Amino acid sequence: MIIPGYLDGCEPPFPRSPLVDGSDVMSHALFWPAFLAVVGGSAAAPDAFDVDPADLEQIVDVFLDPRRWPVFSLPLSGRCRLHVVMRNFEDDSGVDYVFDPGTGDASITLAAMEGHFRGPAFAWPEVVAAAHQADPDHTPAERLLLLVPACADSNRPRKAVDLVAEALATLGARSDVRRVSEELLNSRRYWTPCRWADLDDVLVSLGPHAYRRHAGELSPEQLRLVAATLQPPKHVVHR
Image 1 (spheres, rainbow, N blue to C red):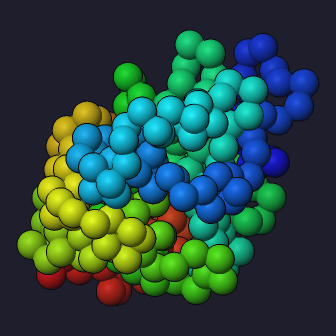
Image 2 (tube, rainbow, N blue to C red):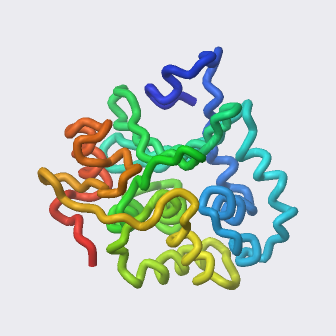
């Protein structure tokens, strides 16, 4: 699997891409408790899905295989895609949320979940809007839960906990869904909730560690493309 520009500059360079399509992994019965625990930071996720944490070891090993990096991909409007990459590079492991414009141009990293973290990637209204974009392979609940770990928004509505809890129940969680929802939405492993604002007619993060900052690493054109793809700018509101 190739994500344009994603592995550029790696030293030593890879003789071939370690990225692999994670669709088969997502179909595994234990995918969600494992993903929500490992990526989402929810300690309660295994119990919510009535799973012994020890039973997750095999799929977690797949998540963290340094030879094959699973990529969980979602189509977005236009030809764009959002990739959740299990970056299993030796001595530089983490989880990257990567925006692919679908034009052959280099991809855009929106969040890096690691020791030297960067993010968040999304405001809450963007997660809700992106979850309901057309997708023949994933349900809105699946899309929502893939995106939530990279979201932080201090203006998130109270109903966000209910919406995530509903998605968890839809995907098989049997108990403690509100606890898992709160853990996913209130995780402090990487960033605290931050404000988002419209600046120069584009939604940007006001968090100090975000890629999507005004006058940061991303160009105005990249910021505008990401915001427009996730949710039309005129409809980005916090309610």
